[in-house]
Length: 505
Ligand code: BES
Ligand code: MN
Ligand code: ZN
Image (tube, rainbow, N blue to C red; front, side):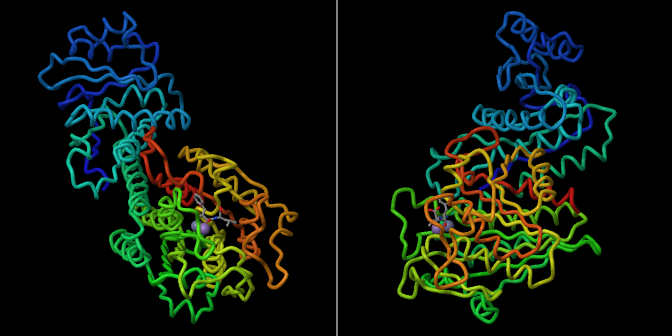
């Protein structure tokens, strides 16, 4: 599944080390006059200087040029343009995509072991720590592949990269660099963990299997886990969640995870939609593209991966993560349009459309979270509405929140990760669309403002708790490789939620 490439850091100048491929980042317009580039030039027998002066090497963002090496320490030298990557977070965000794309180019050219001279990038970004975290993440995310089920070698990349070493140069605060590297590793691997769960076809990623994967993660990363079975959900009165599960032969699994390392601080509750396959149920979806509904558990994958990374990094925080998992299938005992069900908090719901199932599992996910004690915030993550992709495309996550401060914290976290989001309205006005004639609320609100009425439905279960709803339907998967995105599940917004928890505590 995910790449086996090892990524290491060394507090030594790159030119004191050795590797099959030496990688040199170069800024746009940099004609090789710096002392460092003059040293590199010597290793290329003057080729770097010649190609720079003749305009072949421009340093434009992403430009990759292979040069021969006259030094026995290096098999060959690759020069990568980092354009005008600037200071701070925006520079890091640009560099993350450049290095992710680059990692795949290096792999396709059999770069074997790669040594990256980090100093030019660290200077451009203005922080060796940020540059280290960024490149570490970029390599892990960019090299990700889901090729477990290819049985022909010709279908998988011909080469794989061995060791990649980030050479930071001397005189660096070793501890801070190590922490940045560890953070990059944790962020990247947690995202790839979520990608693996989501990319795995639904017959091989049932609620039972997700629960097993979460349990394994809990054991390796060190957080508490409890799996509520169907009988537990019945006892607790989770009629909304169970109404989605009733058409399936796969037993539903309601996963409850806790990480406690924040002393007396109030906890943050994360709730992720875990529909392992969404057929639509009796309100059956059309066949075209239905295979993408294996991704309908991306919210669950996101919260599981997030709490795993939070535990791995040992953040000082208290986190509750809940993943109500089930298939949404038509079947003899499936919920029918017009059925009325009761959520755990007692609210009655008229199920107009069994394909609006995500909000039904979230209702009980949120009600259960609140029954365990008041969180300081609830954040739900869900591939909730096709309309979200219509509104914001595959670029930004739609965020609905009842608290400005919470929204701003999420926005700040997402600025660091470049997993962009956009605030959507939840005016009370939209609530009238989901008023039911026969129950407290109904699960669809008609064609207009589909993502907003879905959010209004969820809002009915959060009470007075600060809450944000992240509709990730538009961004759940990429249709081609581009920067840190690899065709298939994106694993967003795992990194943002980890940043959010790190900042909030
Ligand atoms: N899982 C889907 C939403 C979805 C659609 C995610 C496309 C990613 C890509 C969700 O359960 C759903 O079916 N929503 C319906 C709601 C409607 C019936 C009110 C939709 O968006 O059509
Ligand atoms: Mn659906
Ligand atoms: Zn769904």
